[in-house]
Amino acid sequence: MLNMEIRGQRIELESCSGIFSKDRVDNGTLLLVASMELPEEGSLLDMGCGCGAVGIAAARLKPRLAVTMVDTNPVAVRLARGNIAANDLDNATALESDLYSNLTGRRFNTIVSNPPLASGYKVIFPMIEGAKDHLLERGSLQLVLRKGINAIPAKMEEVFGNVEIISRKSGYRVFLSRKT
Image (cartoon, rainbow, N blue to C red):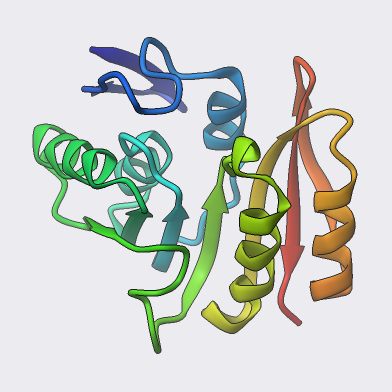
């Protein structure tokens, strides 16, 4: 069982082997959850949700926010669904999707991710490019990255025409691009 306390909320999550950071909530995820900019209502997409830490935190912090969590790994989606139920959330759902493949026609106020750096740019660049079509006007893409990975924020700047660092801690940075 993973425990996370964020913005005064205590969240317990089940995880297992084969899921990123299965034994503890990693520092990048903790920084993203602590600093992500969330609308009071609307919709949020947690891309590459794993066991659901980011999406569940967002759903707990903003009960009027509709949270969709997606992952390509069916085990991660099963865990996220279980964690949604265990945290008694009615404003969150989890589904299997290869990036935006099962989100056709859906748009969000916010897309957040601790992207799978091990998958490389062949996954992360399409995630950034696809975000623009899946964000509402003035919507934001927020990614947490380790310091020293410069190609990803450069890609965010290229796609959105803007990128800023909204938080930094322990070698991690949270980058935000806004659709204008």
